[in-house]
Amino acid sequence: MASLGVEGDKYRSHLTGDGEKNTKWNFGATPSYDVANKLFEEGRTKIWPPGSLEEEVQNLVKTWEMELFHKSNPDDFKTLDPNKYTVSVNGRKGINIEEIGKIGGGYNSFLQTSLPEKLRGYNPDEETAESSLKSFTTTFPRGFALEVLQVYSGPPEIIYKFRHWGYMEGPFKGHAPTGEMVEFFGMAIFTVDEHKKIVKVEFFYDPGQLLGGLLKGAKLGNSSEETASTCPVLRSTG
Image (cartoon, rainbow, N blue to C red):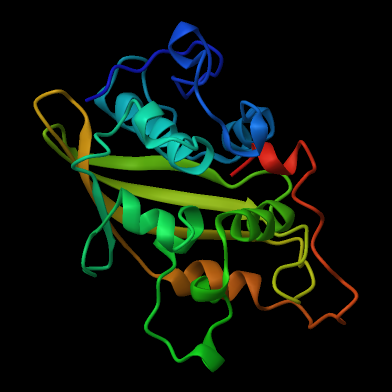
């Protein structure tokens, strides 16, 4: 498992310090997770003992997620090996770093779907990395928190159960905010190599748990556009 410290953030390493002096960041700046960390601490259901396997896995997942969403150059990733890494969702064929970039990365790689286009509340085929991040950070202005609920095995094959949640306080794809908590649960398998770098990720979850909560608000007129992604708060969460 990658070595995880707390420099610069309570739960994520590789954000600041000498190792990140030349890191290229999406949106041009190091992200801040202060808002998301507050939501996490207020809403988590588990507090893992310091140094426990559960805490290590949770911090690894948070750091991995941060790197995927906010680092521009795969060579700057510290948690994974970009030459070996693949990710798959719900048994689909795994995709590598290059393929992730081609489909817009981030949320798009986790929301691939076989639904006909007319039935898609969120269509990853039409989204870019920036537009998808803008959609979700606008919808979840207080962040989209993650916690590990249980760890079933440690490295080299880490298997864990997780929970993701946020409050829909902004519009999403033409639907009004409900103010309600939107959450979903799932399982994941992280495989690490002999250098403790992630080489394979498999997620199993129901996307309907997430999208169903985001599409229940009333339909809005065409004038209600999401806030621009240049907002420093929005660009630093995700």
